[in-house]
Image 1 (cartoon, helix red, strand yellow):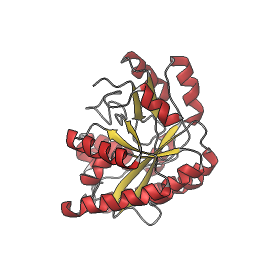
Image 2 (image 1 turned 90 degrees about the vertical axis):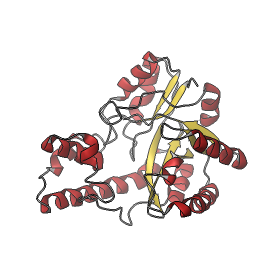
Image 3 (image 1 turned 60 degrees about the vertical axis):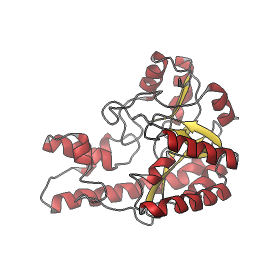
Length: 286
């Protein structure tokens, strides 16, 4: 299947991505895409550049971002789309999330130090960040450089079960709160890579994931959810069909994206690997 518009990519305004918005748009154009959307994590810092870059490259796009949440001790991400979103309303939550991520990152670095494994300079990482936020991938990148190991091996130290893992605190918002915020800001909320709820981002036993997912969908629909990400690199055909059925039953928009963070962070992915058609995009921004 040939996708025309990639609805999820990340620029260097995300703490775990490396390329500029312009570089992403130029890559998308070189690959023959008709559009690409930058959905940086927990920030609106990239908003000012997007329309200018889209005009320069002749590609379709809209303002967007990805917000972190948690449900049943599982990571949930919600995408927000819309050219008329109020950044001030969004930042009322995002600023708190970024500040709390920094506290969590400091705690991870401290655990690494106490274990006698490595010393990492948090302030140096923060200074390099374009989003005023330091997260696990940035710490892992510095750790990989110190230990001369690959990024994936380094990241394992900071994931669940790793010696420097620190769980989210009560500061992380619920998916319901995130969806309501996006709606209040004038955007459309989309459940990002829902397949992760059945895999790596879930802490629930396998037999409890399906009922928990259905309960979560009811909550999100009640909060104003507009869509669900169907086409995603780690989604199997079975999951794609599952989420298409969920979308049809609940009159939701269907989206798709590569979740590209650049060759260093996502070496096995490519812009446009997943996405949607122009007609689907027009529904998303209408």
